[in-house]
Image (cartoon, rainbow, N blue to C red):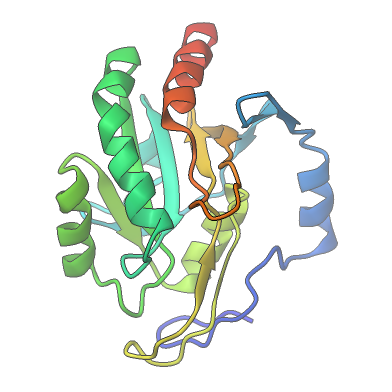
Length: 210
C-alpha cells in the first residue's frame, strides 16, 4: 500500500501487476565475477520527476548526456549509506576521468529527509553529488524502474521506524537507460557495500565498450 503526503507505506517489495513482473523476468540479467549485473538490452526508465538538491527537479532529462550512478538510502541510515557514499567519494575523481558522470543519492525517507537536510547531508560527502527525494507515489515507480526495492513503515516524521533498502548501485547510460547494477558482497559481520575498486574498473570497461 502506498500513500502520498503523510502516507503509511509498508512492504514495498516488488508489488505490482503481473505484467510488470513478467517484463522483469524477460530482462535476462547476467552476473559477472565482480558482482556487476547487466542486461541483454538496456532498460527504459519510466517517466519520473523528483525534488533535487540542485535548483531544478531531477527527471529523465537529467540523465541524458552523461553516465549516472544511483544509490538508494536515507540520511538516518547508520552504516550502509554513509559507507557507500564515502567510498564513492574516494573513487569519484577516477570515475570522472573515465567519462562524464554524476552520482545521485535517492532518499526513500521523505518524512524525515527534507531538502534542507538532504542538501547538507550529501554535501558532507561530495558537493558535486546530487540528492533527490519525493513522496512514495513518485519514489516507488522510480525504484521499480531501477530494480532497487525498498521498504518502510512510517506514520510520523519523528517515529523511530524501520527503513529497508537495496545496497546495490544502479548504472544508467547517457541515453537515460538502465544498463546494470553493481551488487554488494555479503560477508558475516561486514557491512554489505559494493567493492569500489571493482566498480571503477568495471565502469571503465563498460564505457570503453559503449
